[in-house]
Image 1: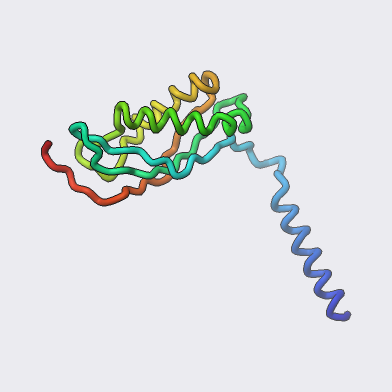
Image 2: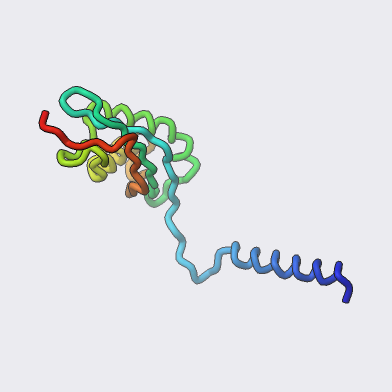
Length: 141
């Protein structure tokens, strides 16, 4: 067997294995669709002053019957609603200015999505990561 035939056989075997792995199997349950919102900067406002910024990555899990394309089309509006809510009623933890209140953030984003996209469009919001602009300590205000 010459070298070209050997290289071709290895390439064909690798591609057929990758294609088999990429094709969905009938036994695997269908995962609900999700979309990531990356690089959203939210303020930590205490006593009327901005104390810190937290950059979050969010994973939005879509509800039953909602198309991924419809949510992707409304992504800028969701970001805008989240940043506006973060300035209006900050998602501040009383004892930590380096993290956001994930429950309040997700509840607010789900309410916004219900208004912008439709009822039940986002079933769950997962905070993937939070990165503080700078490490700050809580001081009595």
